[in-house]
Image: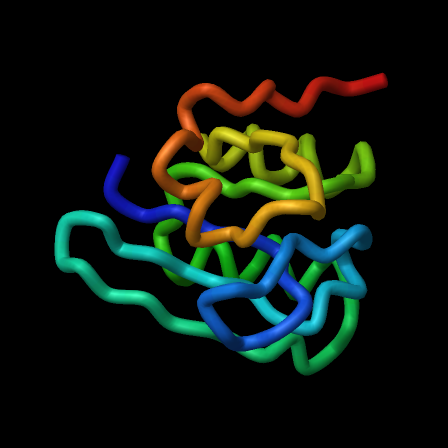
Length: 107
């Protein structure tokens, strides 16, 4: 998995996931092959922005604490694997075990 994304609260390496999808203040993008980490500010505070930004950054897997049905469908249709995780651990820590996180499913 080359590019990972996380909806996060802050732009630091100890930041937890945001409990909200579209209202997450930042999208953390980790390129595991290049060893690069970047934080992209959510300028519009919408699910649409998160989805578009994940697509622009060619994300393979996106982890979040919650995701709405429309955003989940859009990301899955684009080939992005969406995983769910707790807000209690730093996103950078979750990255190491992202394949073990449960997949998001439509409810």
